[in-house]
Image 1 (cartoon, rainbow, N blue to C red):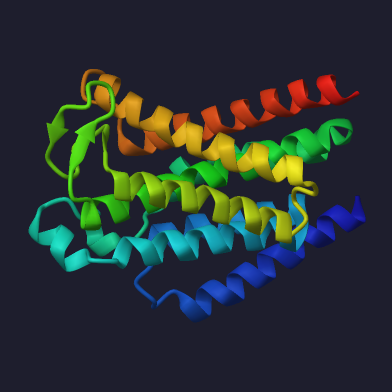
Image 2 (tube, rainbow, N blue to C red):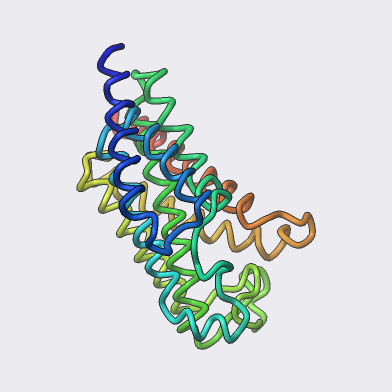
Amino acid sequence: MDLIRNQFFIGFCINFVLIYIFCKIPLMTKGGWISAGILGTILWGCLSWQGWMSVVIYLLFGSLVTKIGFKFKKEQGIAEKRGGRRGPENVWGSAATGLFLAIMTKFNAANIVMFKIGFAASFAAKLADTFGSEIGKRFGKDTYLITSLKKVERGTEGGISLEGTLASIFGSIFMAFIMLLLSLISTKSHFIIVAVSGFLATLSESIIGARFQNKYKLSNEMVNAIQTSIASVFAILALTLYSFYVY
């Protein structure tokens, strides 16, 4: 118990110092930085520095790719609001699923591998979505509605492009590789499960955007939470089926 308390205390101190140093960088709003500090503290306490670092890398690359071609996207009216800075709603919409699974590793050690794979898949899906959306809006030559393949304007909910789809695949593979590098997942099979689940969840998110987002007035943050949950479910089911087949 003392070790767990120490981990949370260390996480709090490191996040407090780093946010104090870097909060002037326009990556997040004030509320976004506070939320990131809370998220980072809990992640460090549950998954040590590896879990914390994986999400820092996600936030860094997600924020950087948002800046690519930002002037063009702003002129087209499809840029992220607040100059691309993340607010608390963005932080929790992207990370709530992963945070829940990270916390579960402390309550059910017997299934820690399953929870870690779900955690990894949730962030693979989110980075895949961010890469696909931001690269597609800037460099996509033709955008098609995923449910009908009718040509639509850039930035249309549920719209996909070849360039954006390739970026999504790269984003999911990249995040799965980071999770493998940090030992949050440990085998080639886990890597494949996480990367594939992340990409499939991103396609699912596009279908949700096309069919349900406007109809049910779903916020982007709600859709993000649904997408990351889908990725985690895909990954956990795939792991279960794989384990059953192998053993």
